[in-house]
Image 1 (cartoon, one colour):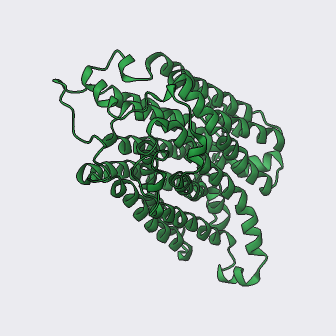
Image 2 (tube, helix red, strand yellow):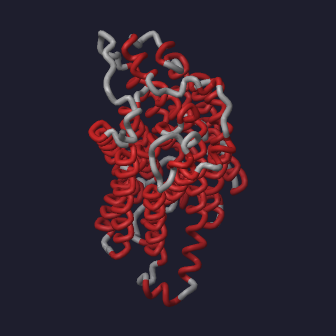
Image 3 (cartoon, helix red, strand yellow):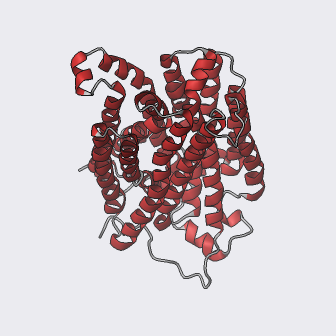
Amino acid sequence: MSDGAATGIRQIDCGSRPTRVRFQVMAWLAAAAAIAYVCRNSLAVAEKTIRRDLDISETQMGWILGPAFFWSYALAQIPTAWCGQKWGSRRCLPWIAALWSFAIVASATARGWTMLLATRVAAGIAQAGIFPCATRTMADWHPRTERALASGLLTAAMSTGGALGALATGALLAPRAEWTWLPPVSWRCVFALYALPGLIWAAGFWRWFRDIPAEHPGTNEAERRLAERSSGQDAQELGIPWARLAASPAMWLIAGQQFFRAAGYAFFSSWFPTYLQEAKGVSTAGSGVLTALPLLAIVVSAIAGGGLSDLVLRSTGSLNTARKGVASTMLIVATALVGGAYFVEGNTEAVLLISLGVFFSGFASPCAYAVSMDMGGAHVAAVFSTMNMFGNFGAGLLPWLVPHFKRAWESHPMLMRFSGGNAWAAVLFLFAAMYLAAAICWLMLRANGTVVAERDQATH
């Protein structure tokens, strides 16, 4: 029997076609992800302007771009997942959206490094519960053969929000000579403006959403039965076996791939605009446009990757092939492309090669979300939040590490000669290595069974 035999991939005949409310739920979750990433990624494009305005160093900005947000976000993953499991997404997600909106307004009032650091910590804590709650909701509303595509749509929304944030921030902050049709706006006004969509979303979601299909007036019996086949709706009645999760090799590999993959992605949400401005001589507005390219590449690849993974699952019945096979293959290709950009001198050519690498890396994201649902059993929120916690430790570590890596590289004449006098170019190797490490974690994972109940099947 294949490892996907128990996935319930055959359709249930309920006498009528399922309604489509679950896709409306997905649209609400995608909107939240996009809004959150507009707020999260806008700082990267504005960081040089803010650094000059607040008179803070590159090292201090590294703390703000990295650990301040990502480590507070990581540490709050498990507590916010517990809240989501106990009280449900309908109660928790509107509060989360309101709190991150207030945090970004507070960042607009910062007068120095300490206050800006504190607002980023607050934003990290506020946003921590979005994706544990969203993943639990997808598990409750979608059957297994739709989960990777749903995860891909969520990932695409994140990158869409990040790209929009980069484009809008670059445009709003650009001098009039670059964008003559748009008056220049201060970074403080930009951040205050970004708080409004989250507050509007919170009010609308609380009014419309219900935690499970059976409670929503728009669903029919066919859609309710479709979602009930393998959902985690009984998890509220169970405790979370943290000791067994910690002892599971599969959990460590799932967390490891997220750590390294998120670290690789963090380049584009932190130092990439500065790399373009300082290493390639690109303007602020131009860096916003070019930063959007890798993020937009993930929009396409996340949807394509989710669709491909679900298609492979329906065709083979094998979660190993559908999740592990797709993710590891694409990450190896991404490693080669991002590392290869090191040897390309032209701005456009290098960014296109990096964007192509990021495109292939994006196929792994829906596989990771889906495998946390596939192997989470009744503890989807706990498994996902643990995975995402490690991912954000990686995402926080690498932006902090970049200035130190760059200075260490610059201190060695031989290394500088090797990189053509450009330490920024060498940073690309660092991020390519992250994608390779993520691929290795996927190759070691056996993506069947559950994390808690089948620890002995976790690795080859």
